[in-house]
Image (cartoon, rainbow, N blue to C red; front, side):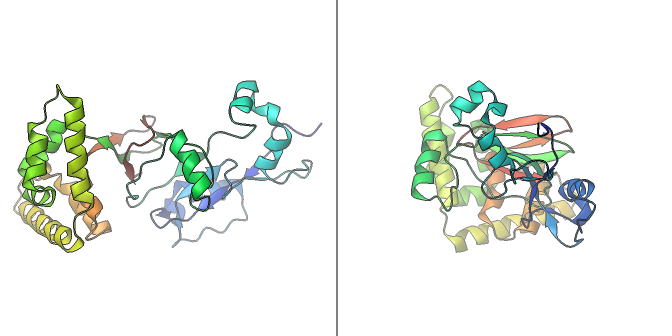
Length: 280
């Protein structure tokens, strides 16, 4: 019988936001599993993929096994998935297990639900190589920071009142609409929030860059004077702006929850939930 347990050589993604060289947990794992691997000190090692994704099907490192990749092995041995999973996911592995090592913030994204994912895969297979939705469970191995989901409206309103540069981008009408929306009317809140966030993300580039520069200048001055800038999320804003100067994403810290995880803690990201990993 061929062995039921076998070593895999897993795909590594060298996205620019990854930690460099052996600073990266991904690089350390790679080096520990393959002594012949040369870790480049100036190269980012962002993600280690353990699974059967078309862009990174894990390679089987065991000559006694005829299949070359994990995807091929599962296709030939679908019972390994268990009956329920095999039937529900047509004999394919329904998740991708990743290790991330985040040095600079990732872009803000939201993953489609199952229905939309299938549609996008059919229309744009080059951009959506599989038809599954992608809820995520992030488990911290080190202290970890991310943005996840919209803040309670009271917090967003508070920022609209304390960060004039943000209010200028949103516009007075949309800001007041959100301020007036009551918690007893979730649909009204949702509609007002959508208008505000859309106004932000569709701001004219020159306008938002000017407002961002004004905000960064103001917070930098306040910090230099020893003032508390936490009311404007000052530390995080300056950090993100140093990584991505002039990027509209810097303003999203006023809309999205900042989540800090300690090792062993986790957060779940459902479909359509805007999120961005920041560091860890």
